[in-house]
Amino acid sequence: MNKRTAILFSLPVIVGALGYFVDVYDLLLFSIIRVPSLKSLGLTGDDVARQGLLILNIQMIGLLIGGIIWGVLGDKKGRLRVLFASIILYSLGSIANGFVHTFAQYALARFVTGLGLAGELGAGITLVSELMPREKRGIATSLVAGIGLSGAVFAYFIRVWFVGADGEGWRMCYFIGGGLGFLLLFLRVGVLESGLYKNMEGSDVKKGAFLSLFTNGRRFRKYITAILIALPNWFVIGILISFSDKFSSQMGVKGSVDPGKAVMVAYVAIAVGDVLIGFVSQWMKSRKNSLWLFHVITMAGVIWFFNLQGALPATVYWVCLVLGFGTGFWAMFVTMAAEQFGTNIRATVATTVPNMARGSLVLVTALFNGFRGHFAAGKDYYMSGWITGIIVFAIASVALVMTEETFGKDLDYIER
Image 1 (cartoon, rainbow, N blue to C red):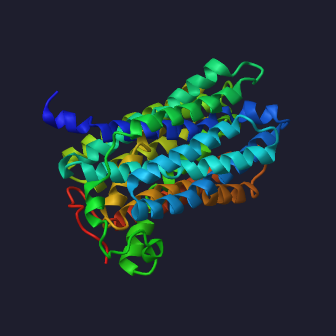
Image 2: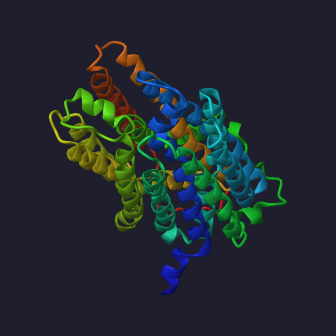
């Protein structure tokens, strides 16, 4: 292994990747075992989908609130402390999910888990970005996300291995997630704090000033566009793929579609896309152009998704594969956000931006459900999905146009 390769597979990158692996496992586990877990709590029929969407939104609210808390702490107390604290909280939250017996308990457990999950990716990407040479930064953060996103695939197979035909065994899936989190704590011990952050300690620079993102016009524009770029991700994952069984039914797909399998297939492709986009960005010498390429692929996948009338379930899974690959720019969009802001507020941005994007699913689903009320049952998912998708992609495209290029940018600076 040469020196350049060794840098890419250094301990911070490996630990960041494994941390995100556990993060994604826990984050997507609910979508994968939503049906059997809610049925075991006594929910039936449409309540499984309706209450499942409510719990998903509650989890996203936890991510939104946690993103602000962990982001500010990451700049005020250090990247490593946030990594330790967040992993402890989401591990405890995951274990708590395995002990719930009512809908209210389940919703609360998912909220707490969301709070913990909010700190992992942003702090990890910030740390890796500040430790890596600028010419390897994009590839390193893409490796973190690409390897980490395979946690969704692992979650699917854990469901296959532990959840029986009767739906029992879903609690063990949560216990495994919590156990993996605590095992990860041992690996964290050998990771060092960011040198850029340590150089800033002891100075009178104001750190973690979240509100400063809203008091300066240029800063606010950069922040809001960084969030809006990722709107298609959670529209695709949170609505199209998570409820692919409902869409397939309304499009007359010839057979049943398993949304858990659809999520797993999509995340295999997302993991591949997230690794590949780092190399594409390196080849193009541009963050923005690589994002545009994946943006177009996602739009093509969405158009195919809404033209599956009379298709077989296997075709649905192929579309989910394309959609997953196209939305495989998660690490790149977080890296771009981190690169646009100074060291004294970088963790705040890198942690809040992905969680604001995740939390936007609450607004997207509200829009989606609002449109559903205007269409007859049997076409409501299909028609409202189309309209919501057009709006989401239009907003994300405008945001990407307004975003500055950050490839090769020096990160040794602070925000005044």
